[in-house]
Figure 1: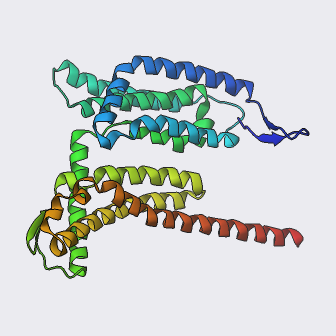
Figure 2: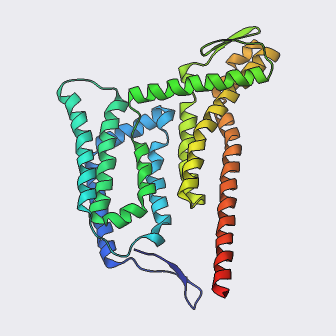
Figure 3: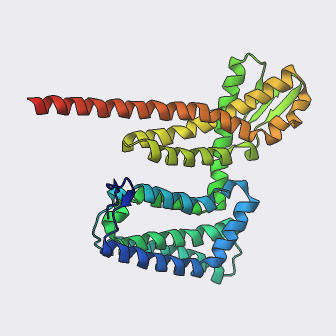
Length: 319
């Protein structure tokens, strides 16, 4: 399917109609998707409530909307015909069945899982069945073109408890390491014991809940979306998104440094201030400065490379 905007003689925008075969496949996929929503209505409702109650999952309701928008942006690159992929359908449908079997295993054994663990199994099944539907109704060609937006649906799956704890521990200790060297560079006297810092007049601990997992996760998702919107080279997208991880750790270390400076040079009671308990959005906004600087760097690099290719092509054609 290829949709192109054209300007007719009257100056009005025209949209090339969708190929009938693709249109039928899209309608069937829509019906299939509606059926999935009905079948998974209870888990989807529970996910919506979890998103309202836990900031870590507040992004979840937006992911289908963002994925749909990115698919719409790629409409001009979609094939005009469809060829259903049996292999892709079976693989992802089978993966969905595995997720459902995992959830059923615990349910039938009477094991009460935390809500996020239950939803991890159920949303994993839902996302797998959606992708299987794309392979079945629209084919491997369209699935390949829309793989990046479809991949964002993975963020509908909550972290299992063990995975979340592991990520929090890694971010906690890496943030403490970065904060320690920042404090040393700032020439603040410090004694360190793991994630505990003894500073003049106060002891600061980088707790697990201070790992910055939510803001780091949001920054990572923002990197994925920003890379897709503004970068063309897959390698540039990969490295740009990957760099959001150390960027998030540096941001969290800088937050600890800021608290240390305020507690040592202003008042130890600053540990109970707004900066500590509600300052996350401020430091997230600060992390967007190097984020957009990196994005602008790679964007300009790609533009220069495109101009060089055009110039080279022009020289070859003249000869």
